[in-house]
Amino acid sequence: MIISRWMRPGIALMLLVLSSCAPRPTGVLLDTDRVSVADVIGLVKASNSRLLSLTGRGNVTFESSEAAGSAYFTLALRKPDSLLVKLKGPFGIDLGFLFATRERFLVYNSFENKVVDGRPDAATIRSMIPLALTYEQILEAFSGAFPIEGTAADVRTYTIDEGRFRLVLVSGTDTCSYWVDPETLLVTRYARRDARGAHLIEAETGSVMEQEGVFVPRKISIAFPSVSRRVAVFYTTMTVNDPAPRFVFALPPDARSTKR
Image (spheres, one colour):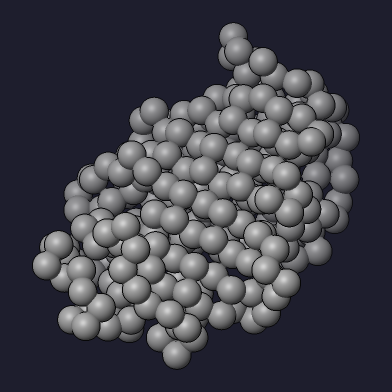
């Protein structure tokens, strides 16, 4: 069931809830003495770089103190510069869309017939999303990729946990933990805490598929414990590295516009 006032928190949740042919590692490489921290970070980066574009459709569900519900979506993503997410409710009811590039950040709410248009800087994004996210982080979240922030010098602990490499890094005043699957080289779990130990983000990916040597998760779950919000995305269909993803949308001529 769609709650009519869902759009702003729903989009906030959705956004909080998106080269080289390096050889795939095998189970024998699951050894921190044989695979260095720098190697793991480099392999994850190389794996992420092989995803150039993504198109697909699926279902998104969200929970928050303001609203809860679900919607169908279609997505077109091209790294590193374009993202379009269109949302529909039951019976094909149009709910709105999100369009983002490095130069523009646009959200249309069909219930209110309102469009918010601005630059994708920290102030604009934070005015729509109650967390400090960058444009790059939004793009990566919809692809289910969580790039490792920092270098080997930033890693505080490096262990094996439940059959995955686990790296704990310091990023500014936050502490970030990454669990890397040795077969797909995807970050299948990600957690971020602030200086006080409060959980800021907890994310997991699953149901991984492979197309043309590129691994992508069909299932993405992101929780924001500090603001009691959670979003889950499940792709029913997806195409990796579509050479011509379409970024077509239309705004009603009578839509109320707000510039930021």
